Length: 112
Image 1 (cartoon, rainbow, N blue to C red):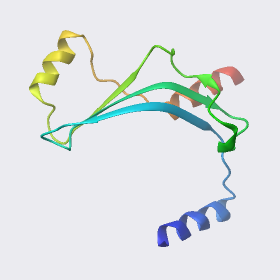
Image 2: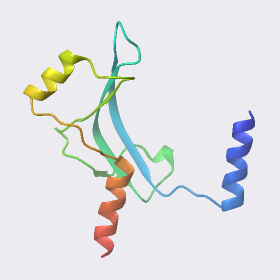
Image 3: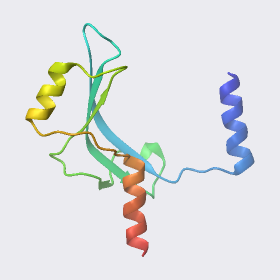
Image 4: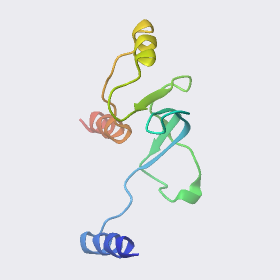
């Protein structure tokens, strides 16, 4: 309950308002033997900076191609060796990606 009071206070003090709508479909998998190991796949990543009310539904500009998936691997400690081998064989390497950051960059390009 206290955290909600603090969030509410922050919104009022700084006059915060929604600025971006981001939606995506997520498929999430966790390890059977290790629940600290998770892989998620996000697709249909959409954004808009208008009609920010959630009741307006899922629509907007696609962040990535519709047939493309964003994969995120989360694990404590080192990655399982079997997965390292598979990713290497498929030439999949770590990279940094932020949905909000990517959308923000694309908005800046439109402005300039």
